[in-house]
Image 1: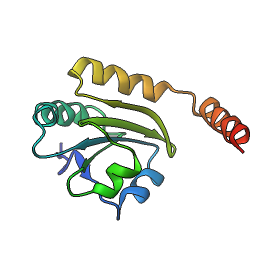
Image 2: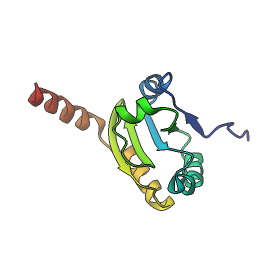
Image 3: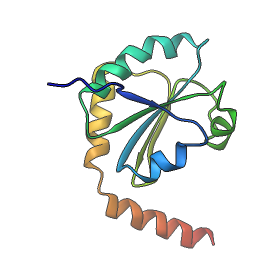
Image 4: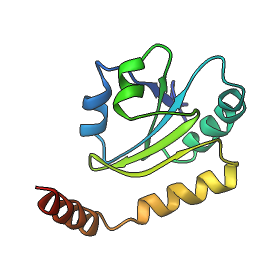
Length: 128
């Protein structure tokens, strides 16, 4: 059995949109090198990423990618975001224990995206 070379993808403003657009589900960890909780969460993130080869696990270094951090209004790190079909379905600051992280991924996979798209369309109609 061949090991995958990289379990996580480093995201930059150059490849962010392409990664989100070209994958059904992308989990993004916004982090920084100086952040203690980020360092503590990193091995959990890596371990869980290896259990879900059907999901893209990505990381954004908020110090190097300030534009992305600002665009997504990242106020504390680590912050996790889950995108399904280009829609943010989960966003939460703080590190998670492995079990809680695994449960969130399971719930994210079970989300009815047709229902979400309908809600987004209704919200956009109400906002216009």
